[in-house]
Image: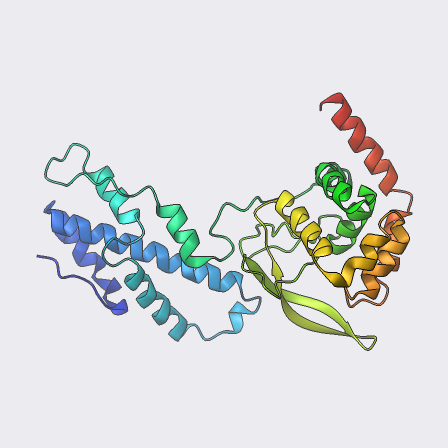
Length: 294
């Protein structure tokens, strides 16, 4: 009978499991399914490591791989995450000797709760084709957020345009999936959601320097806008900005004064986009698109 695999270096035993499974024994089939689940978890852990490290190629992976393999085995002991059960259920079709397995439907939720890391959940991968699409995609969310802030929605679109290069430089994970973070909000304070750590340019005493900082990641664009509104309305430091929300330029000046960004010309750059020749045309076309139902 197949021995139960319990150490990371026993992954090599998969060949033996494959041979044992030819006998169609329940024990061998169950163990093969569990090993497949462990391998899947190991690959998932490795992908998340790579997604969280821009300099992944410079790391010594030896001990990381050993650790990930052992963790994968530990996580899939006993009931595991549900993948092995699902495999057993499929194999049971037409084979009365294999038990019918019912408890597998909670797998996605259990993985998400276990890892709480980007790339695991169903984060919307937003990739606008150009500036027109950038504005038309964001306008409904900007209008909703601006109504709460008492702000012109174009201010929010201009700020997002600066932060993301009109959607072409949105923070993405190692798989290229969008963080949906349009306002450069860092994963600091009491943030408990997903985050991505990337190189960023920060200013200190007027001098620019490169650092690696964690930034928040959201399930979708709506969540990103909602969190921006929560940040601005929920912090005393931005109270002056809220007081001046009816005046876009004063609002942006107050944001910078409150330390929203370290760039000393942050407000000026957003104003240049806001008052430039393109943004208003994009907004007009976006409104025409929505009015026509296209």
